[in-house]
Length: 61
Image (tube, rainbow, N blue to C red; front, top):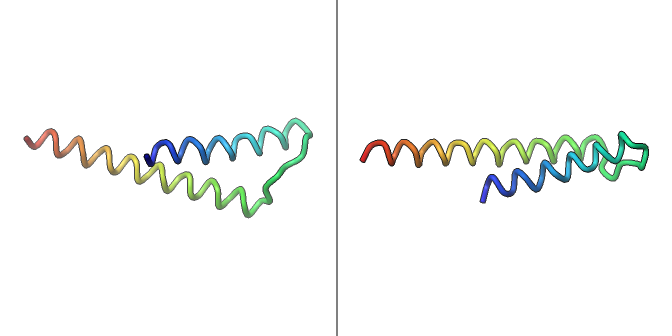
């Protein structure tokens, strides 16, 4: 779930940056971009920590 949310949020960020780079305009302000990337990073960290906990739990058995 967390990794999927990360992928969706980063795809939105990437699409916004791509559209801005190609001259088609940006849809998000700089602050919105920062918040979107920050939330995406938080979901990514949560996903990694969850996977590490699951791996540790399976190794302990």
